[in-house]
Length: 470
Image (cartoon, rainbow, N blue to C red):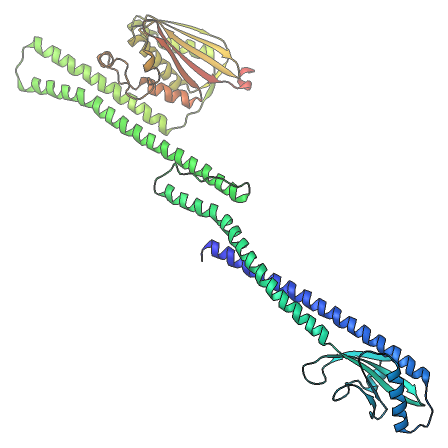
């Protein structure tokens, strides 16, 4: 059964039963009150008639016939409502206005009451109900049983009329309630149905699907939570698609990078093995094979470092900034002398959380890039910035980069000048590796460059208060 049907039928059944129960209780209460009023009225008639009859007395020793006539005269003189019956101790009827048998009110029942009278509702025969009040009195020196009865026909007729009216009202109210329940159930279920349809669309790949949140209640919260979930799913899918595309681009670029040098190596090696060449021709071919082999070696090393950075966690140690950069500069001296490059450092003292080997690899790649850009001088400065950070600036006086290249320099295999990079055994992975190392240190990396005027690389490392106070 659908949720709409469950909600509709559940509310309908509860509502109809509640209305029926309320009607039953109301009709029962009204009937009891009407019967109670009739009983009070009958008791009042009985008391008045008994008072008059007993007060008038009657001659003692009067014959039964004379007694009957005297009773009849007295009763006829008294205005009264209801039907009167008078019986003696042997239940002989001395006076009776009740049709058929007299009411079932016994001497024993009356005598057992402390009030001296009794009132009850009875059905002596047929469908009519009567209320009867009775008790004993003395008349003509004899004790008699006086009963006053009145039909409850008015009460039952009134109850039947109320019941008929209630049925009509009940049907009208139930009809209006069903319409209202249908509307409420529809409004309750509609957001859930729309959410379910949106979930089906998302399952089919339409991740942009959203549900409009029209309500400010729990169902509205459900819709908004669903939209948040859909947004997260869409973001995750986009990230996966981007990652898949990046891997596809990586593989394509890597294959392309391998294809050219391998083709050349295989071609020249085949030429050397199949042809008899003079020494002056063999040397350039061997040199070319060596250059391409060095290029492949650099490519494989960079690729291995990228894979390692993706798979391992590294421990960051607190190291003195001056000692760290002095040590790195000392280790880079042969590299700089080989490339005729002057390296200067000016570091403000503090403690940095770094992984030494990876940090050194990052600086080596940045300085290597400066050397490949024909830089003659690289200056590294370090300053403590605001909001607990340490700004490291690596400035060179090389060729610089065009503005459109700044946003792509950290992409794997991207090269600003591919012909020059290959000639220098470049793989296009150096700055991609730098970006990974920066991310591992929870730092940021930005580039500022102008063609012909050099490049500035800014690395912002986070600091810890305890390290600064050490």
